[in-house]
Length: 640
Image (cartoon, rainbow, N blue to C red):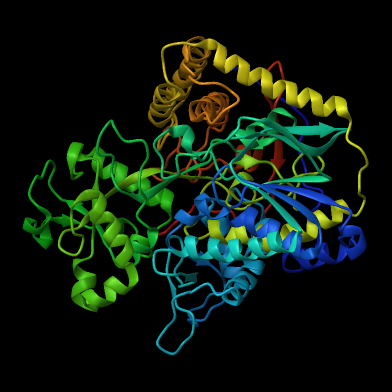
């Protein structure tokens, strides 16, 4: 796959001056829209997870006319509901040394120095407001004996800054945002469209002015126009087929925006989560995550001997290797996700893995139960233990859990500036759909923090600055018609193939290819193989996919086929981005770039930049945004 390099990219919206003052400076400098004028302005928000739900609710509360879209049958079915462990915030209730600056530092370091300082510091600042907002909404965070909100530790930090609601934090936070959204729907400021999927972006006179959607129940193609469009459609981890994401999660919204001119940043940055229930067979269509919070009290280990098939209870203490505690004594079992995942892969590659195929390690709660008592452990993790037992048939109170790394989150996404605006004016991108805050690896409990920070606090300010110049007048009918025709033509093309293979069969083959060649470890050889095979598989898809049914009806096969087609195009760009970035950083581990201890080895001289890819007919164009560090010194990460 050929590419060219274009001009360098700069974020012109981030203010200068001390990093502690930049967000306040930007807020004061942002233009305001008076209440009467807000009623004249229309905003489309696509997605109703934590980012989209909170954004639509807040914009409605401010007085804008908002139209919200989701492909689920209810906004509360968004994938944010699956987040389990917690949400970070620099409240320092424990008095253990936490601060806004420390959260900022841990996030930049955890992302392997590949995130913007301005964005990350703002995230740390806003984190303290999120908890107050959620408590006011009635989110039932865990509390200590004295009544204060409780916190626990997560990977990449030596302080307890993660607020939680047992193992249901995402669900409880989403219900808070959902209630706020429903209040605005009842008030008439937000119009909700469920079971609608965005299939294209309308760009007129250089601005994002609407979307083309398909009613997933009737098959009707609809056009919706606005003064600005907000994408909050999540990440693209399902390009690997097997992942911890809900089956409906896809890349279509952001990929179609990319084809319209929005740059795609760092697509190779994907997160492998270390605590997933291992694959159990070829029949599986998704994987189940066990919360990272379990690593607070669970100890990770494997047998010292290779091919040790004894039951875990029969392996004495002196014959166990608590490898994370051994290799990383300062952080132990709470090292960041990328490091824990690679360490698990390494011990399994040595032949010391457990369970079917040797692809698993133990997460053992024996010591925690002995220390705290079963009741205390059950209060913390009971619903997670129950979920594990239902899936595996094993009781983790009696035997250790078996876990193995799996695809979980994507740090890449559409490029946005400090205002969360893409390279298309009027197109704003929030939450996991953008690339902005996590660098090459996301720390646990930071996804919920970013989604709610973007939706409740950042976007309402920066979007207002853009909308102050609106309304933007009538939308050119030619641009709308062109987008609608493009959508209909693509649907007709999918239906016309009438081949012999299902979309799922192509998706599964693509996913295995991506996991094998662009998964936990990438090499120049593997990536070149992927870049040879992906176009061949895509060509076979367009020649042999079988899409049954019709366009003007409920047709889930058609939905899947459209999403898989977009995954092919994204997969190719991911592998190209991984091939070009010949360093290791965070979740992007190039086997050719590691130190003597097998740790990721960055190349700051050549790769301290964001890779932002522009879509072009004759091949992608790479734009680099230099990353400058004034407050955190770039060093080789160490959690030892």
